[in-house]
Image (cartoon, rainbow, N blue to C red; front, top):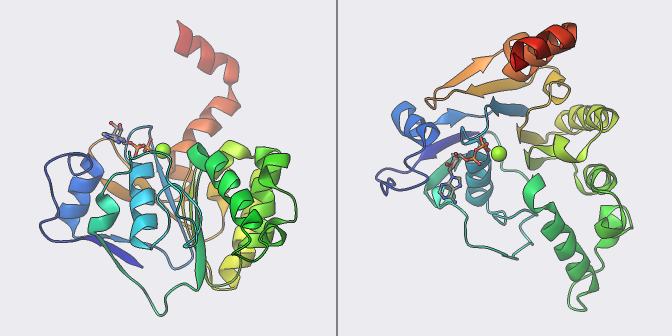
Length: 242
Ligand SMILES: Nc1ncnc2c1ncn2[C@@H]1O[C@H](COP(=O)(O)OP(=O)(O)O)[C@@H](O)[C@H]1O
Ligand SMILES: [Mg+2]
């Protein structure tokens, strides 16, 4: 899948002022792996803005969910997605889901509402049978990826590790491998060195100037920095605090 900025989309305001969006404009677009693309980079480099724009361009609710979700709790979504053109590879995804840690609570509320809506079929079974509000954040996330995610889907996740233990992250890695073997595609913004270990994934690192560089696992910043820290936490901290 390739994501390109529509010509003359630039409004001169956010999000077009972000370095990562200028880079999209300059480079003519960004190629996403047919299986797994990770976006890494420091806080504020624009990863969430990009993932959300991909979600909007793919027809998902900007605050999370699938095509069926239409709730809105705030009007702060960037308009980037309206100016992003997605060129699909061999085939368009059959289904999908957009999940951002920040608004998961609202997605959970919407799942409950849709389930109770007499005009729509019962929904909870496809989310594991229990309302996400009656599960922990991590449990309900694992319900979602186990029961709701399926073959030939497009899954856009923003910092899924926010909900997950290390064990939970490993479970997500296993599920990603399973689903990509069934034709699903993932785009994931993350800081988790565990998630990044998905074999064969493309890791795109966004720099402070918006430049997007493909890096291998060992050179991805979350991996390199965590490794450095874990090798000598005491020394690392002393250096940091002095
Ligand atoms: N609604 C908004 N209006 C104006 N600027 C925003 C808005 N949302 C985010 N930004 C700006 O965009 C930058 C990138 O944000 P974001 O995409 O959330 O970064 P990341 O997910 O990489 O941490 C932020 O530093 C902020 O300055
Ligand atoms: Mg973010």
